[in-house]
Image (cartoon, rainbow, N blue to C red; front, side, top):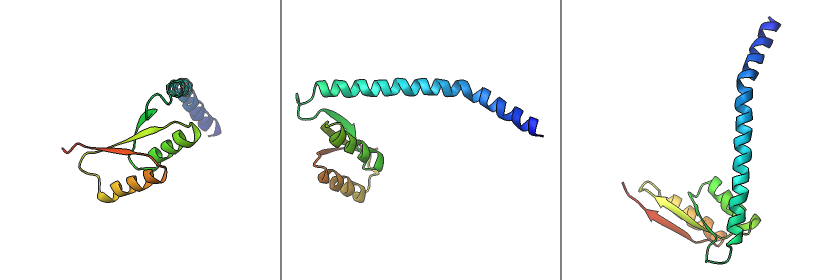
Length: 113
């Protein structure tokens, strides 16, 4: 019984192992791409009013990204929000309120279906 469980675990490891290696390589490449993009943004800083444009949904992920850009990377992003007609007034109010606290301008583009 123990040897059967061990064999199953071994098969799983053998099947996942190569995928994990590929995943790690992709992750490393993505991190390198991210660092390169940040370097390019910093090289062109202060040439325009904003250093980059970031999509802003008002959710915790895009808010955390904005915080990181502004306070850790010292990059000035312009927030772009796309409203497809389903965004509630409460969501819009929360977006304005959050971005006002961090002194950011937000452009809301309206694309109704």
